[in-house]
Image (cartoon, rainbow, N blue to C red; front, top):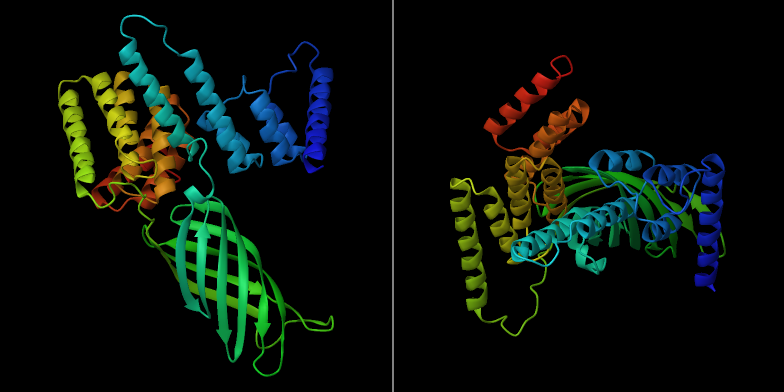
Length: 410
């Protein structure tokens, strides 16, 4: 029944929207979905599910470039919508660039494989992966609670044990990370739980909360939020602002747990891992040699092979995507360089690896937009690079670029 109602809603929304577009644009093809139409649907209140369904049906005219994605984000598009637009654009580009059989097709196939890797990195999650594959377990220690948390891309779930002045509570939380600007994350959500007031009795609590987190490193973060508590007592009574709980400020440190190693028949044999490491190093050496010969296309193909030698959540992907962006810029293929830099940033967010390679990726994007003449976007990317940069020498170089582009504002 739910599927039927959902299908009816999708068909009705699509029909109403496209018929309206047809009336306004009688000569336009109404079977194609564009970014402008998605923005119009967002502003008219269309649901995320309907928009995603339409993207799957009409992906031909979508624009997945950085400027277009920024416009969609400003119009209220969710991460799922942005990733769907980006994925469909890359898929269409790959289909158009598919090589025909003939001499040299082996080299072209290597480039196609490279584009697939870039697509996976730019979208944030490989096709077919589940939410659990992208999450992270962490332990929270703070006042006045002990917690176990699981982070998704934009959402998180948490179980908490709270104790304060003889009051104990067992609660569950749902988070929405609605703003991310490394190393900061701003979130809101709802908490519900069971409360014991010592020998006095027990009840239930419901608490909306708002707060933020600051990443101290890859596996550590500080979190603080404030939440008013609504209590429900046996018999149907409620009370708001109880002195013992009232407005609660939660402050704590979250420690991310290491991801479990993948199970395999060779789990106890260190030889395969050693061989994998040796192969990866060989690829890097070969790529450096190709760069020294100014064989940038050959170096790019070697880096593509190195990409296949690491897992989908390996932080080395940040380096590999960034290097391929640099190589594409050397070859004069600025559009491909932009895509690789975006893929490097996506991989950095996925792995939490905001190191020198991520800084270089942000600077590469800034340089790309600077060459296009889009100074405002270039400044924003330079500022993001500055936020995560730990090298004083690199920071001075970034500051010089910012001052050069905007001497009055910086």
